Image (cartoon, rainbow, N blue to C red):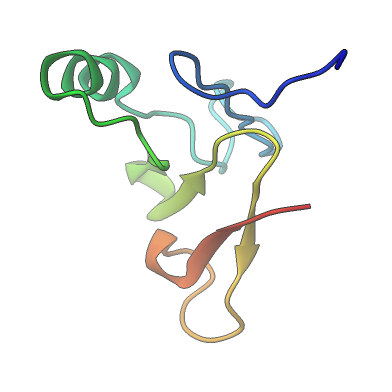
Length: 88
């Protein structure tokens, strides 16, 4: 087997938002350190994280690779609660 799933003790996530981190309207902040600390201290691997941009009033799911955030089809598209992590 050449490839194995990205799993414990590793997690990778993609933040696929335009202009993230450059002052644009996309979610550009998330608590990676707090999430890793919780994982280490309590042994609970993150199923996802939430990224936000308070100035643009937007939140979005950050899903573990190879999953990606998909809109559930209802509710405000700017809210993370209306997005789910989906497998490719």
